[in-house]
Length: 387
Length: 219
Image 1 (cartoon, helix red, strand yellow):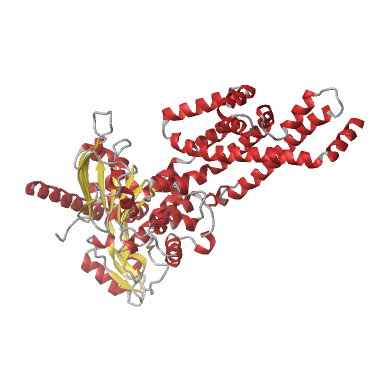
Image 2 (cartoon, chains in turn orange, red):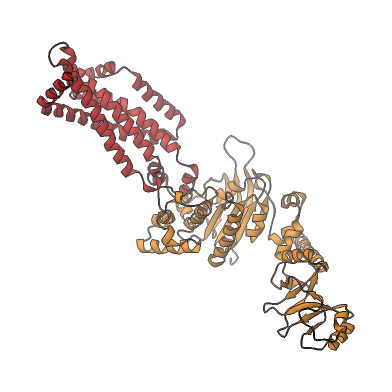
C-alpha cells in the first residue's frame, strides 16, 4: 500500500482501572508522513492521554497502534520510545547534566560513537537557534524558559526520530517568546519533515501549527478532523463552532492569499505619459480615479480627473497618496487590516518586483470567504455522499 | 586554668593510646555508616514507590531510634556475644532512619517532569534510577549520611559497655574511678575526642558531598 499512514491508531481505547467511562473511547486516527497533526480540545477531553498512548507512556486497554504499518502495541516500550521524540510542557531537562549531555541522551542509549554524537549535538543546537559554543556546556538552570524549551526540542530530535510527540510544548512560555518558538519550529520542520502529533488547548496555536487539526470532544472522540482552512470555513457542528470561537471567518483569512483574488482593473498612466492620455483612459474605463506609476511601473499616487486638467507634468504632489500596498503573497488577513485603515476601503496590490498588479476592496474579501465556505461545504457533502 | 593545663599534660602523656582509641572509634563508625548507607539507600529505593512498605520501613526504623541505647546494645549480646559485633549491629540500626528518610525524601523531590521525560526517551526503570533519580536525590541522601555519622559517632561511645572499643573506654574508665586522680581527665578525653572526631568526619563528608554532587545541582 503506497498511501500507508506513518502512525495509525486502530480503535485504541483506554479505561483506567476502577473507572467505568473510558478516558479514550475507540479512537481511530491516521497521521500521514511529514505532517503536523494537532490534537485540540477543551481540558479534560483526553488529548494528552491520546498522545501518551502513541508512545505507550499509557498502555492502551484496547485496539492497536501501528507505526509504518508495524504493530507496536506489544513491542518493548523502551525501544519504541527511543524511536519517537517526546516534548512536554514542563520540558524536564536533566538538571544534573549539561545541555550537550541532555541532547545526547537517546543517541548514547543507541550506542552512537562519540564523534557522531558531538556532531549531532552541534547540528541540533544550531537548528534550534542556540550557538553550540555558548550553550553546549551550560546547565539547564542557566537557561531561560524559551531557551530550555529549545533544548527540549533539540533533545527530542536527538537520535533523529521520524516521529515527534509534543504535549503543549510552548504552553508555559510568554506569548512573545511562544510566537518566536512556534515560527522557529515551523522553519525547522520545513527542513526536517518529521511526522508530528502536537497537543494544545489553544485553537489559535492549532491553526498556526497544524497541517491538519483534530478537534476532540469528551473521551477523545473526534468531532472534526481536517485542514485548518476547512475547519474555519465549515465547522461541522455546534461543538466545533463553539470551540473555534468568535472570529473564525477572520482567522480563515490567514489561509487565503491576495494573489487568489479577482482584482479591479483601474486605469494607469506613468509619470512620463501626458495627462491627456490619462483622461482618455479614464473615459474608456468609466472610472473616476487612475493610478499614477513611475517608470518602473511602481504605483506612486491616486489621481483624479481634475488633477489631470492642469496639463502640467504629474509628480509626487499630484492627487492622493497610495498608502500601504499589498503584495500578491500577503494573506487576506493582512489585506483586511489595511482596508479597514484606508479611507477608500481599497488597497493597491503590487507584485514581487514592486510593480502595480491591481486593486482589491472589501467585496473581494467577501467573495473569497464565500468561495472558501462553499468549497468546504461541497467537500463535506461529497464525503457524506461517498460514505 | 590549672585543670586545663593538667588535662593537656594528661593528653600528651597518653597521646598514642588516645589516638588508638580514636581510630578504633572511627573504624567502628565508618564500617557501620557504610553498611547502613548501602542498606538504607537500597531499602529506600525499594519502598519509595510502595506506599505501605514505605510507611512500615520508616516507622520501624523510627522505633529503632527510640530504643534506649543501653538496652539496644545489651539486646544483641545473647546473639553476637561480647565485643564490637553487638555494638556494630546496634549502631547500624540507629543509622538507618536518617539515611532511609532522606533517600525517600530525595527521590520524592525529583521533579515528575524529569522522570516523565526520562521515561519518554526510552530509559528503562533501572536507567531512570541510576542515571536520573539517584543523581538528583544524592545531595539529600548525603545529608542523611552526615546526620547518621554524627549520631553514630556519639552513640558509639556506649559500645564499651558491651565490650567494644573506641573512645567510650576513656569515659567509662573515668566514671568508674570518679574522685581518683585523672578520672575527670579521662572522661574529658572521651568527650572532647568524640566531638572532634564527629567534626572531622562531618567536614570530610561535606567535602565528599560537594565533590559527588553533579555540578548542575550545586547552588
